[in-house]
Amino acid sequence: MHLREGDLRDFMDKGKHNDAAQLYHLPFGDETYVADTPGIRELGLYDIDPSNLQFYFREMAEFLHDCRYPGCTHDHEPECAVRAAVESGAIDAERYESYLRLLHGEE
Image (cartoon, rainbow, N blue to C red):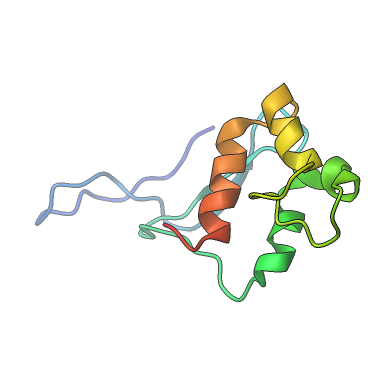
């Protein structure tokens, strides 16, 4: 993959930038992509209702309806299928931690 690069920013001596945003499919995993967003330092999620956040984490999908309590946030409730899947290794712990940070509004 060859990316077109721009010039270094003289005043900060930071890296080179591509000319436009690109989405690249990675060769491992069916749905693994990298977004190259030149000049953008941070991305955020806006207007996502916390009760819908779980649906943005595809790896949780098969476990969502197996929790004991309807409306489970997958944070603290007993008999949570998502937390059990994290403990068994079926869901990556780092992805689950990312979910919790977003759920609690942490950066």
